[in-house]
Image 1 (cartoon, rainbow, N blue to C red):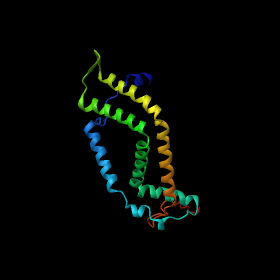
Image 2 (cartoon, rainbow, N blue to C red):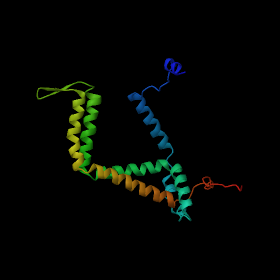
Image 3 (tube, rainbow, N blue to C red):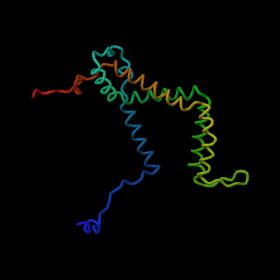
Image 4 (cartoon, rainbow, N blue to C red):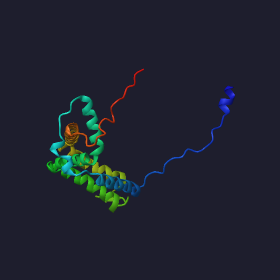
Length: 185
């Protein structure tokens, strides 16, 4: 019995998805952006004060949040993006660090196309070039408080989105779709 297990052969093929190329990644991102852009609800409906009300219970808060996150997902993404843009624009050092890092990576990827660069008689490989960009940008990002900015963006976005989703009444009569129904035994 033990010999059979040791001598057993496994055959077959495991299907694997093809790795994403750069162009297919751009295509997927473009399709996602188009989908999100077409699903943005009208802003008048989104901020209509007549739809705001105090939830009656914690369960209703949960239902409202789930329903509103589904219905207004694109609007909430835009709010988070606006908060991000505000934070980057109001922090000049962070803007400079992101510009240097993004511009350097763009140059290495699209203009330099994997060629070595010679600086002061020393040749730098592509990986070393990316390392130089990181060495240049990391101190700037540290001085610009990039980590605290990221956490501030996450916290502010979460607070605003959950607050709005909690107080905005459900837009459809199907607001009890998430309620548990119990049958007598």
